[in-house]
Length: 416
Ligand SMILES: *[C@@H]1O[C@H](CO)[C@@H](O)[C@H](O)[C@H]1NC(C)=O
Ligand SMILES: *[C@@H]1O[C@H](CO)[C@@H](O)[C@H](O)[C@H]1NC(C)=O
Image 1 (cartoon, rainbow, N blue to C red):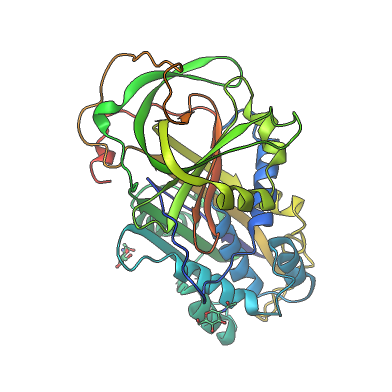
Image 2 (tube, protein in one colour):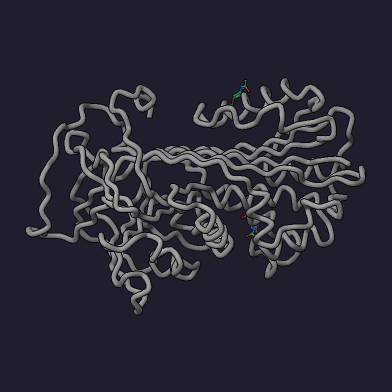
């Protein structure tokens, strides 16, 4: 029995926002938002009161890489679940290629790097056509290793991931993840670093209480600014989501990428809002937020999560590739190949931008009485996505239930 390990560690880092500008024609449209939301709902169901962070686009790319080597039910399940079944067979690879290409910024307003690599067992022969298409669509590197040397392989792959994620993702795999039956490991990493178009001034950051959904409070660093953003107030019409909630879209420099924050009213737990999140609603938010001056209070935060995609994907209908019946015959003639492991690790940091300069100390009394502009005060749990405004691709999706306090003396920030 061969095991194919698919890893899609992701990574991310980020700071900020995009803009709006619609560019015409030729812009591929991401069709995977339904899949992204379903993934989120699964993670939410399993996640208790934890923060969530994952990269839907990166999962789609990793599955695309597997699909390239798959046939029969293995292939069909992926097409169905990810949202490609309306496309002619094979068109999804070109779509994924175009979606990732659309994220590469020529003007260096932000940095997004996709790093894909296949690590193959030395003596296994892969179909040359498969390797060719991996290069063509996914620009995947191919390296050979000896999986029976499991510690050495874990170290080599971890180094590779570290190198492609500015050291934000370390020790992704351990020797236990490999064995003499492992034949292939697929690693897919995404690295993102952006600067807000409207940066927060570090001197406006204050220690502030954040109220968690269980009623407890934690001290966090709250950033503040008044600026032009996209903003809207929405309601699902029933009381399900606790009535009106706020959506704030903050563009990163260059305006192609943005972070959207969805915040229920203070007394409404995020869990009441989460069930209404659906793919069409993401569209509705994006299309209906209006540019205006907004007062924003947003905690600095750092979220990180390692997800076992195998369980989650099976729940979404991608089962065959994980069983003995998997058909990965487009990849290699070797029989009995199936996916043994699928892991994603994502990391996101949100700061004023460079996090240089001193952080103000002491509490500030914030009053809600003298509000001149809409006020978004994220001092309680919220949902967020980081997306490409042109294609709709969702680079990251998650929620902040507990923001971490980021130490202002943390030198890791100096480089951001
Ligand atoms: C991807 O881009 C190429 C070049 O612009 C285009 O020919 C192709 O049709 C696009 N594929 C999809 C699925 O949009
Ligand atoms: C790290 O990545 C860069 C490019 O991303 C590459 O040139 C370099 O060889 C890599 N180093 C290692 C140790 O993989």
